Amino acid sequence: LQLSPENQSQLKNELLLTIQNETQANMRRKICEVVSELARQLLDEDGNNLWPEFLRFLFESASNGTPELKESALQMFGSVPGIFGNQQSQYLSVIKQMLQQCMADWSNYSVRFQAVKSLSSFILLHDDDVAIQKHFQVMNSRIIYIDTWSSFYKNSFHRI
Amino acid sequence: VETRATYLLSSMRNGAVGDDVRQMAAVLLRRLISNEFEEFYSKVRVDHDSLLLNLISFNPKMTIICFYCSCHLKTNRN
Picture 1 (cartoon, rainbow over the protein chains, first blue to last red):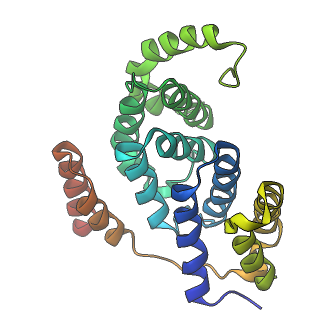
Picture 2 (picture 1 turned 90 degrees about the vertical axis):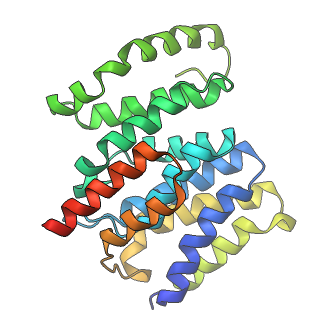
């Protein structure tokens, strides 16, 4: 038996809602892993993303969310950096802007650090794509700066 | 399988069952999605054009809106 279309929508919507309502960091991270896995499954073999609401949630949370939501969005993007599938070239500038904004969020170290981790995952996914590497080259200095700061946190869970 | 997915989702959201149970439900749901996805979920193609229109409606930044508009025009042209 398969979920009905209504139950499929319910599953997707409730998962996104649960991330927003969760107050515990550990639990939120686990829910993000569930959502990332679902998003990964909803990318078909031709690279079509079958869950556009997730992409919308990702951008919205990373742009206008609370620090916790920004961190969650970045964690999920880092888990599934290929989530944009065959639409990625259209979203490249938006992805860059999203990561740049989060890396410039000086009010929250976790957001900045998670943005660096997500960007690293994205670049590693495209380690043979020079055009993408050049597109993100301008962010190198900020990565090094944030990574240097991370050495001050080496005893905390933020450390890679 | 579909009952398990629904049950695990509701357990994950149920604050009354305790944190350990909720975390376990989340781990099991992730594994279920990872290993048995095809058995309880049918993939349906969606229209990406509608996504671009949706994105316009929420993001207030003009530069991003312009980018979405150009993408939308491009996809329409093609």
